[in-house]
Length: 228
Image (tube, helix red, strand yellow):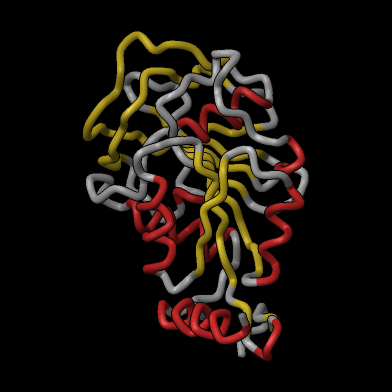
């Protein structure tokens, strides 16, 4: 048994898992699929999930990290989907993708505004610091972008890890807290090393153990039906 494993009711070992908060992006379920392909459990919750709702998942998995999905919305609008600030207070690693990237920056006083032009499609990202989620990346990586708003600056407590011709802050991480952001979508196949980026987050940053198997979910469902 891995050192991170825990035991759920019925003597079943709880897998390590990643929570994905759904802000309405088209790739949310694809993110969950990519995580499960690594033999790590994933669960999707609404974007406004409370810290207590996330902690309640402890019954089925050990929550090791959180991913904020993309969204067609703009963080600059009053009616934009919000994140419960208490979620960031859980101390878990958080990775914001596209809208999630912009949201983390916005919540910490970064400058997010409409870009001079949209970035859509395969884009060259210039890796300024190949660390964290970008560990092992080449100086230039081909990534998939789909956004209108752009992060133009972040406070000094963040370090910029990558930029593009349009986005000055295309990737960042917080200097003292486990907060990370990517403007692009690592979950889609068009981001050539997207899976490696997600693996860096899941295994190197969140320290997940790849103990989950798809059949585990089937067995749990059967067990729950029998208990009814």
